[in-house]
Length: 128
Image (cartoon, rainbow, N blue to C red; front, side):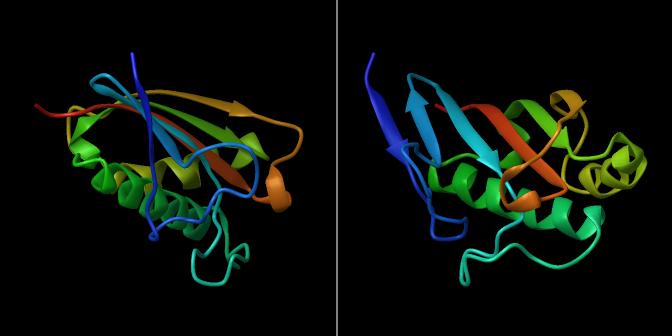
């Protein structure tokens, strides 16, 4: 099965040996996105709600570059620097997905790139 990299200028460029996303058959695997402004390459200021919004804007840009929408997302994993931010993240996250929402896991991690408060990755079923 061929693996095709997917990129979008609406999300931060990969800063290491990975792709923003990889298409394999009818699935898209989106790498973890942290709240980096794609224009400046810098971590955005703000609380976990603002950071969640920036992450999901990046994720949406990558998904759209593959010809899909957030409605095609089947699974996400949310990595939080502090599980006490879960409720705030959850409220921000909920505004991005219509029912039925994707399956999701949320875990607290010791540290995230650039000391972000959140990172989200996704698996998407591509249409057609």
